[in-house]
Length: 367
Image (cartoon, rainbow, N blue to C red; front, side):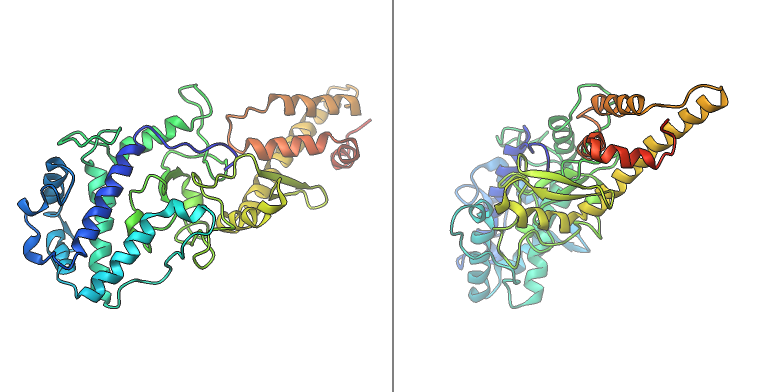
């Protein structure tokens, strides 16, 4: 989260699909909606905004998930008791307004399952998650700008390409890409992450404010996984990639005694947010491992150079030469490379005179 995280050019398509999901969910919860209402003509405007979206949704509902047709599951939802419909309506309205949680005095965020009947919640989750698992992967009914389209709409692969392109730190075609969360390598198989987990909040499965592309290490347990990004429904002490970015306040603090680094923030008010981000992603431990590996790499380079000098009967390194080596190392660091912030923190720490003497004594090579 050191750099700005952007919504990408196809984000309007995700926003349009999020609105489609919300509209469909609330329609299913309407007491006037019955299983018999779920027909292709029954989904046409004014139920849904356009015929394109209605036809796409009807085709989408013909799909099978875990042995059940989505249409059958949707009809079960339409048949729920009105008490269940009312509870789900309230939940949908609250969860749909994710952005409100990052404004002053937000309404309570629901953290419990809204439905008393487990089978109803299971049916709802299956239908709504299918918009992501099946609909998004094969193509949404929207162009990148959110305009409905009958064919050739935005796909999962389109979003990944757009996100990677928008967040690339280098124009070089083969440059290594960086994870927006940990600043490490994005890797060849990055994950589309749901910041607010879709297992508990399936309504946000294609929300433009809830999707990012991150490295597999960040996304998998024991790191982020399905961990909550709120404190029992309170988002006040949490960063958010889009709605409360850490860019500009997140910083690294170097511990010379432990040769370690920790995640912190420039502003005191943001310390709890930095602590939660660190806990979510285990940043202190991961960044310290990288820092120590970089530290040891440069020690080994200097030891080899010194050994070469000795074997060739040359004078060993002076402190001035070693200082010049470290300064050149610092100057050569590229912001586009993975772990740039970790490496820069180490280089600057070593360059401080009080620390460099101790660091170089470990090499036992100064003349």
